[in-house]
Image: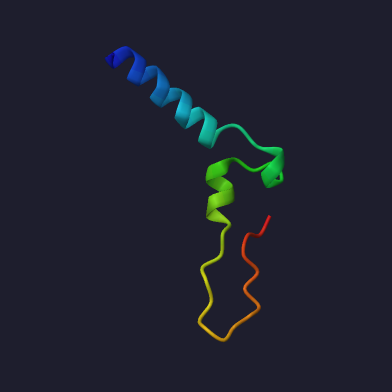
Length: 52
């Protein structure tokens, strides 16, 4: 069981940090998540959201 957990942990890190996705403009999921802008204060309707 510990071997399986170790293999899956390494796979998950590689999948999320090393493999770019076409759906995120060639970014890894980690990089894409870092590009999400913080919500703007109420009354600012120009929140651009995800910037790729």
